[in-house]
Amino acid sequence: MTKNEIEEKLTEGISAIMSIDRASMATDIPFKELGLDSLGFVEVLVFIEKTFKLNLVELDLTKKDFETINSLATFISKKL
Amino acid sequence: MGFVIPSSKNRMYLTGQDWVINTIDHMMKASTSAGNMSQIVLVLDSLLDEKLLRKRLGDFVKAFPALYGSISRDFSLAPYWRIPEETTDVLDLTVYTLEEDASDNDVLSLLGKAANRPFKNEDEHLAFHLIQKGKKESFFSITFDHPLFDARGAEAFLELFLEYSSGKEIAVILKGVSLTAPADLSDWMRKFYAGRNVNRKMLSLSRPLFKTLPLPAGNERGFNFHLVSFGIDETEKIYEKAYKEAGYLMEMPYLLSVVMQAVHELFKKRGIDADNYMAPVTIDMRTGDDIKEELLLNHVSYLFFKVTAEDAGDLKNVIRSVKLQMFEQVKAKLPKDLADASSLLRIASLSFLGKVLYLHFKGKAATFLFSYLGNRPGRLIKFMGLKIKNLIHTPRVPAPPGLGFFFNNYNGRLNFVISYLDGLLSDEEILMLTTTVKEKLEAPV
Image (cartoon, rainbow over all chains, first blue to last red; front, side, top):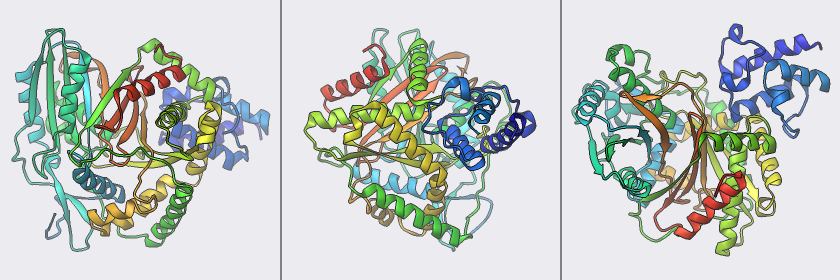
């Protein structure tokens, strides 16, 4: 799966979790600015596990890797 | 509670979660000085114009009859919020004056009295208090009944009032506030399956049973509130530490873990040999950021966290355990199952449901309650022309357990409130809890 495809899937999943219009979700906006909180973020982790078969909850979820859809897609592409 | 002929116009059907909130209200009225109420306090940078406040607030609540609703059941036995045609009650606003040199404790003491005063009747769900301190500071508080609002709903209500006080037409402001809600009398099989899942979860939480603090005797006790307000720089450091210790955006699991450790210390000091501790955490179930549509009644559910005494000594272990439990419960859709399953319980009377709720845990509810409300930037910045310096939540909690820990972030400032039944904790224990939490957060003690 390419990084672009991962970004596409993440955008679709996260916009649904946050009830935000998909078209208005840029891949470089920090999750925090989108209003994502601990609960929303755990919902994203559940989505990642179901979609990419990756369990990330026990890893160190650093700001660098998880700040935006873009950085998260990069992180996931390395793990796949 | 009365029975009336159904009409779709003046009723909002209650969800199962609403019914549970009403049950807790019923139980708290029997076991403490008042019901299931909470309070939001705005700390303002100058004196508020009392006359203007009274006029504008009075006009606003008068135009909003849903605030004076009460519980009824219809022929299908579904409970609902009965909205009166018009408001007959008068604004309940009490004003206090304190000297310039009054301490924070003096202010908190008055706010505590306000938060513990029962409402006059079943139609009253809001009371307002204004404390004018010297000439440079005032405190405006709204005490609200949880059957009417959850915490976010009450904040949103204040936001709407601010729109009104800045000159916007009341009809325009209230447009979009939903004043109807369906009875939700379908999908029974889904609800039964959800009930089965919830039942299994409650059984697993009950074995082995968690510890609680012994409640002081008497059923007329009020709640005390202890507040710790962190500065903006301190808050930033606390969040950095949270991200480092628990992971990005993991403030809630981190703060809960720190509190778990402080509670573990408290139990050790009391000589209570605990196997584990359990805390439900309130979560907001609204899907959109604009909560105006879901302003009234409750839109919350819960996650449950159980930490063994063995793990509680090590922060890393607690964080790991809390994060895993959160992941598993979100993955299993427990909050949604709770909401679905609780709708089956609406048939039960409040007193009967009160007994059912405590059945799994042999009369105990939890070791303590916890919630964290994150920042909502750009909202409630000014109040009738005055700058809001801080916004604090002081909720009463069910007894048992009679103990709650509540964090909220207002404009980059983290507030920490311990709410406890009068007589449950000594002053030394409160000091120990706050000191332990501050030390763990690495904030100045």
